[in-house]
Structure formats: C-alpha cells, structure tokens
Length: 152
Image (cartoon, rainbow, N blue to C red; front, side, top):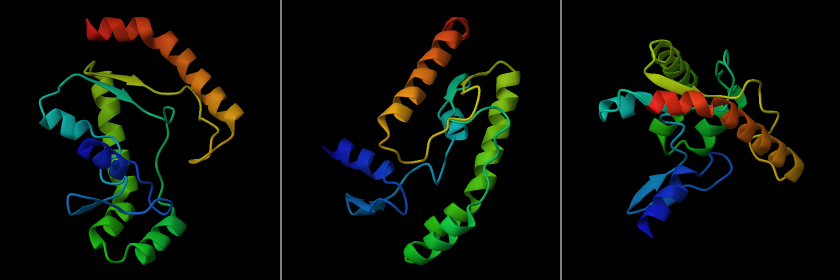
C-alpha cells in the first residue's frame, strides 16, 4: 500500500490535485523536480539509457507565467516547490540537451513522437486519447528493430 501512496503523490498534478501526505511527508508531481531524470539514472550507474519523451525533436519548455504565479500563491507554504516550478523550464531544457548529446554518442536510445501530440494535459476525449495511443504504438513499432539492436 505504501508504494501506491507514493505513486499517487508522484502523479499529483499541481494546481489540479491536492498535496498527498505519505509517511508524514507531502508530495506533488515528481516531474516538477526532475522532468527527465537521466542525470539521476547516471548517478545510479546507468550509462546506457532508454529515454521516452512526449515531445518531438526541437521542443523547448518555456515558463508558463500564469501557472508560476498561481503556484506561488497556492503553494506559498512550499517555497522550494515554487522555486522548482519557476526553474523547471531551464532544468528541463538542460536535461534535454544532455539527452540529445548522449543520443548522438550512442549512449541513449530516445523514443519520441515525430510530431506534437495534439492533446491537452488533461482530457477525457476518448477519440483523442485513442488517436494518441495509436500513434504511440505505430511509433514504437517503427523503432522496435533499432531498440532491439541498441539493447543488444
């Protein structure tokens, strides 16, 4: 049960979900702190990595000023979280640069869509969700032979 509680905390979307309390600690979406955790995986000893991205080549994250302002009000009791929201685009883009460098060096196998996924962050539109899922399956089928070679 504890694992599921931590999982619920890690997927609690800021501004939409409530802060989850687990073991006396408070949790929100871990993607705010480390959106592409390749540095952490490297620290843990993983030099070759399979990285799954949700944006196509060329994407750069930008600060959402309204979300940052709203976060600074709603989460004012969590200054480290507010700072993480503000600095997220820079940290995301730095990690993305590392991903591209390691991919070019042959150390990372990157799975990413070929074009932007036309989907809001939260959706209940079954047709759009199915279309995004189907596009992902097609992309993975295209990449599967190369992934098998990478994995050796």
